[in-house]
Image 1 (cartoon, rainbow, N blue to C red):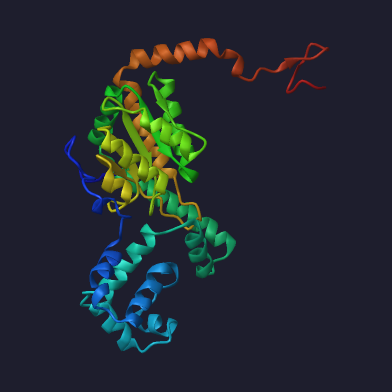
Image 2: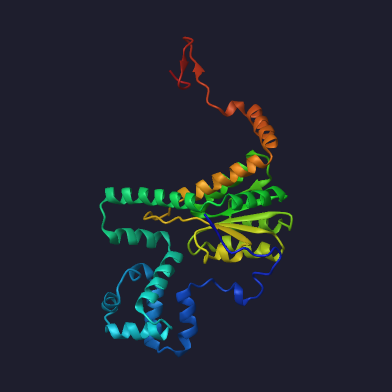
Length: 319
């Protein structure tokens, strides 16, 4: 686990309308800067590459030229017009653009292009899960875990925002925090409900945002909105260049790389588990008291075999 760039509390990270423009990758930024000086044909070529990186990030310069029915020198001159000296530099930024702009469709398309068997795809997925988990273990910084656990402990309320595939992650973290005595919630329902919840937050609260890749608009907007109200923010994401890492006061970077269309959340869950352990151990007696009360009041929620007419315990209500 690595941490994004730390920001001084209260410093205006989102200080102007210019900074609120949709986050751009390095390749997009280069294109935006060079666009006024590019010919119409070069502009169209770069836009096509940017819009379909899943079809181009793995291609050599010759293959890219063939893909667009162009002469290889045209490709070279176009990327030089963007400020690149070598095609390899352009290819690296294109690969980064693909990763940060990745969608479930792009992931699935990339997996189909690999033409692996179903068995090979399954094995590859498990290998990537293990790789992500090992990467987290090798980079785990206990101090970072303790720091955010203490920040959670100081918060009056904790709102965990995770949408779509990140929703189960936000629910896991929020439910775990509630279980040990924290006032935490992962809003569900419409975008309107989420907006109403974040409007209730103040400087004594904490917003935790979970999103990956190009990040979901509602999640990023939540971070920006609460920041204007002086609410501390923390993010779980997969790149130091992601919008979540850029706009949050601090962040953990955890890989979700996977051939699966929905990404791999094995390492993210492990990071959340580490955080929950840290929070529970800051005040172990309080955690035990809350868990004991919950166990006493909700005993009926545990499965108990029923007793049939014959006096034998059955696995269900019906014989």
